[in-house]
Image (cartoon, rainbow, N blue to C red):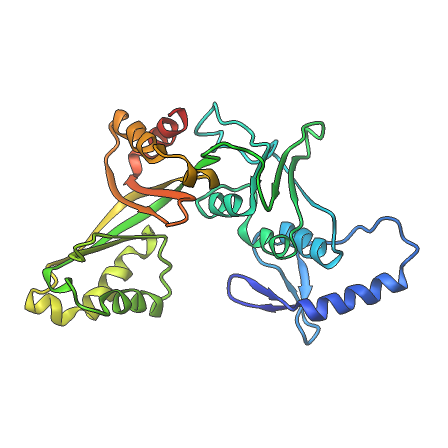
Length: 305
């Protein structure tokens, strides 16, 4: 039972669990259950779907409702790889990774498992196996709470078709509420921000968004900061359309000095120009914005490094 939205659904866990328990009581003699994925119903009993990636999401939902020991997602690759094998031929299959590492990689373009698929499993602490339908003898990748691997970096991924927008001005320095107005204006026109970077001087804020929304973002911010632009306290709102975001992901980066140096060193040796940098305090993810034409070259360089 779900509440449908525009691009996703919200599962009504209480109603779904109640119906599941009732069904299991009536069919307690069954040893194996085959369940159709992707479909659901609203609270009013109207048929609907689980939207994009809904089949894997179904498996995770039923895994949670049945309190399963594990969930297996059967796909067309041998597991989660350290990078896209179509772009990085030497990419390797990871034995295991944490939920947070898998979520980060999925957000940054890895197509193996969708973040919504992992949500019910994370909530119930159910391990997820990613395995290959065509190579069922391969062990696959285990995604669970705490990875046993000591690798500092688990994988690299990219988001293509990104625009970098830079808002710059001396009138932003020390003025409270500028970021709130900026990102509030973007929210009003349904623009999702992929990455944010701000200098400590507060003279500039830059952020990455999907390229298709670049012009809308620019016009929205020009209206929002019309007075500041007119008076010169904000000097420019600049759009760089042909960009990509490259991310390095790994839980163990936090405990090992020098990982960022190797990451940026590999990009430097490959002659890749970095437009913006973002790293969370968890140190699980280092993200950079680069020119789109350098995306594959950069991905191969950091993977080799």
